[in-house]
Length: 104
Image 1 (tube, helix red, strand yellow):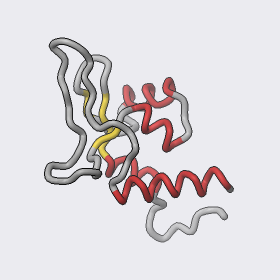
Image 2 (image 1 turned 135 degrees about the horizontal axis):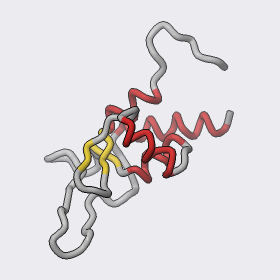
Image 3 (image 1 turned 45 degrees about the vertical axis):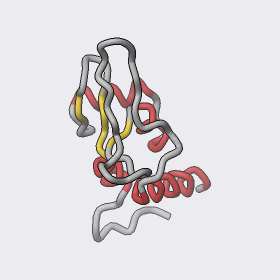
Image 4 (image 1 turned 60 degrees about the vertical axis):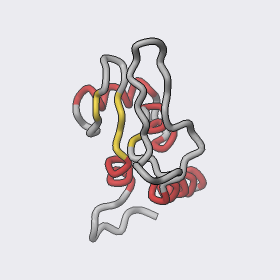
């Protein structure tokens, strides 16, 4: 129950658009530097890394990468090793379908 509440809190964070994580990464010389924040905002992230996806879903990296490779989770592949997952995709995964009451 506590874990579910934590995930819902993380979903609220995703919806609110705030994240304590760094929003752009420098992978070294010649790498693609991607800013994952919405233009004109300071805290709203549009895309998340695979590690951030795992933190929200409580899954392992290998499970997440397998789902990304199979296409089970929509992602944007920016290089051979790097996937970005849109915030809307994660929110949709954690939001129950309309009309379902879910298990309590």
